[in-house]
Image 1 (cartoon, rainbow, N blue to C red):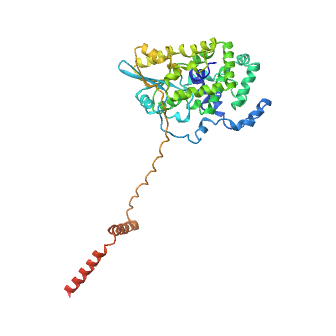
Image 2: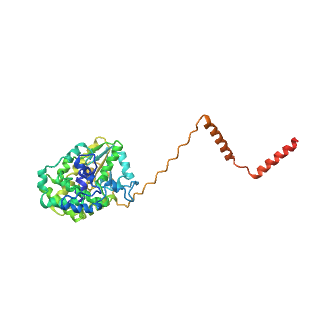
Image 3: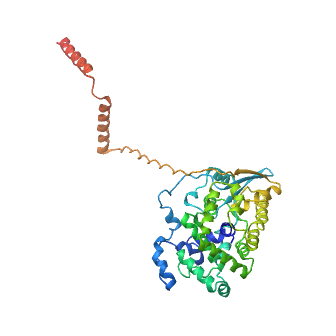
Length: 412
């Protein structure tokens, strides 16, 4: 269906919230529990899961322990534009909502732009209470039963087993989010995790520097864009995504998108219809229009409002919102901004391991006054002076000896 685009554009909030850890409601904790543990065999279809559980991809944190993954200097990745109007500068940054461990540290250009901004604008703030509540509401059981029935439910069950998801873990989620969670998990095999999503790491940086975070959209609207409020369309999308999961094509397309983003290859990204296989049917074309073109004016309005209010905004939005005649750079130019590309050209980049920190020098020992210690210090000073003076050269010693002898004769 819409493949990587659905995952990495509209579903930023569901993906991050579903996988960010134990600080949210139960539905948000389910992906954090997907580790190397062997699943209990519940019924015949899950016996095979226990047999291959050892092959499950590591959790996001565990993946950092792999050889070659560690603390590295950041390099510039993604797509960045400078926005100028009314004597102020804002920034437009195309992101990935899944990421690799080595992407956690932004590159110097991105860091500088973020530091020069006083507000971070995201599609959604994954730690906002209203967002958490909207995405943690349990789905209507009757609606879930209508959408997930028969062979569709069995296909989803098999894919959950393949992804090492414990049975029933995500049963409370809306059906479209149940499948979306699987689509995020398939990318773990290539080192891509929602926990390392670029938007999320930028949010952490902003919070550490006490920078305000503003959401350009809300979770309820994002969920509506996925299904258009139609159970029939939701079922159609689920079937299409299950096709992609079962064939293995989704994993390859996610990896392709990640590689393009990491190279800042705006030209290749703009040609996504050539490689995404996401515009093959009228249904796919309608969905893509709804998820990209129909959302972009609202995103542009939000960025313009922030800038007009006197704030310098760093707007971090999914990279596919940047391309085409309805892309955000074009829309911002139409609103009177001077739009200048900063990171938009493909280039080979490498994050080098950070040099080890120098061992701290031991603190100087302070002299202790009084008692035997003073005597000890004086003795030590005397020894030090003798050592500093060292042994006299043989010639000087001999001269000294002769001088003493001569003086002795004079006295006699």
